[in-house]
Picture 1 (tube, rainbow, N blue to C red):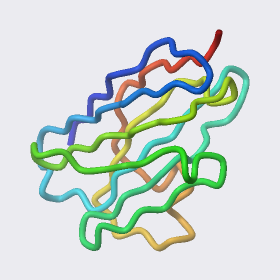
Picture 2 (cartoon, rainbow, N blue to C red; picture 1 turned 30 degrees about the horizontal axis):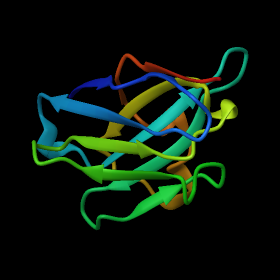
Picture 3 (cartoon, rainbow, N blue to C red; picture 1 turned 90 degrees about the horizontal axis):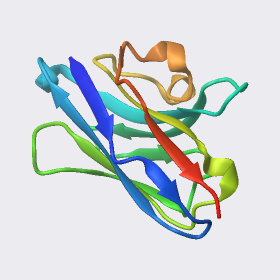
Picture 4 (cartoon, rainbow, N blue to C red; picture 1 turned 120 degrees about the vertical axis):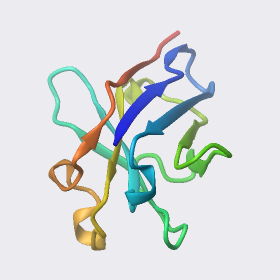
Length: 126
């Protein structure tokens, strides 16, 4: 499975951006897709996970009620709609996927995912 994330950019605080994650390869084997982010000097941080079999979504507390993950009309690809952006949302955002059926406690762990996109930079600044 290959993933490509795009849609990042520079936005003012309070603004919105929509990231896209396109997939290719054996996409039918994907069970969970998600987004992580990494700010300079910090560890990779969980943002959201989406489970294809149930449509369930799990958000980190820092983005809950501001970010929304949804599926596209093209294969197993997803959007990440980001609203009310804050300077602390500045990071490189990575799309990820796994063929494993993750239990809830592992959804937040980068090591649980075995396919990663190249990352797209999101900068929130005035």
